[in-house]
Length: 302
Ligand SMILES: Nc1nc2c(ncn2[C@@H]2O[C@H](COP(=O)(O)OP(=O)(O)O)[C@@H](O)[C@H]2O)c(=O)[nH]1
Ligand SMILES: [Mg+2]
Picture (cartoon, rainbow, N blue to C red):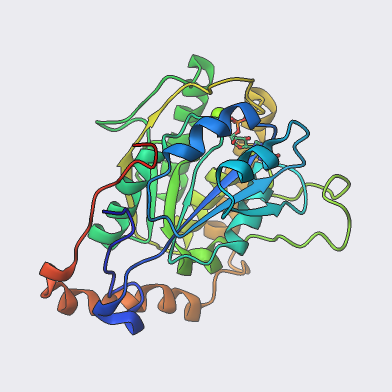
């Protein structure tokens, strides 16, 4: 039994009922050698591609990861920050479904199956992890970050007319066909990643930026309960104040771009139609629901 043995006719109609959705997992990592060693063995079997996006780690993160998972793809990010790392990982991913999760042990690999199932069974475009719906929780979030997240979440819901329950959470999954709507830039004009200037979305504001762009492109979102564990070792790279301010600026800038400015470059209508067209097939194909099979997770370590 594998996490990926799913049939997804409406997502990639050309594959009809003969194929299964493939899954790529993108893991940004900056000096996580001590943690990733516990994370990788817990990945469910059947994942087609694991992409580690290294932020220039100096503690042997890449070597440790490759020793555990020689089939892994290692990508070097083009600028700095978690957001840029994710953008580079997404660009390298080839799976039908992309799951983003952390390397520090806070996001449990066993939940990948829940995200994949949510996308496949609901037909949604984006499965958004939430620590604040029944079944979710956190041992990692501080009270200051919890409060900040709540206020920023309320702001986004008010401005963007969304119903998110957890704005700043890094465990999410989506169909790769949604990438054009994210409009992320990985190019660094030939400079080295350490000298390249950080662009909008390169930092910890990435999840907020994705959530707002997903809403702006009218993608369908399903929230998935997720339990965030404490980081296994080391300290967070996030600064509640400076990164909180980046998130607030992201909300205001993205809101202006998406909802106020009429000259805004939105994803083209073609892109939006393309994003939704596959689901037109869904209802008809669901009649063959006996073949829409989702299998549970097998733990690699067992
Ligand atoms: N490649 C890369 N990964 C990063 C960077 N900053 C953070 N990460 C990774 O992103 C994940 C979340 O970061 P973390 O510091 O735990 O932030 P927190 O979970 O918000 O407290 C971890 O896997 C980090 O190693 C970065 O600049 N580059
Ligand atoms: Mg963390």
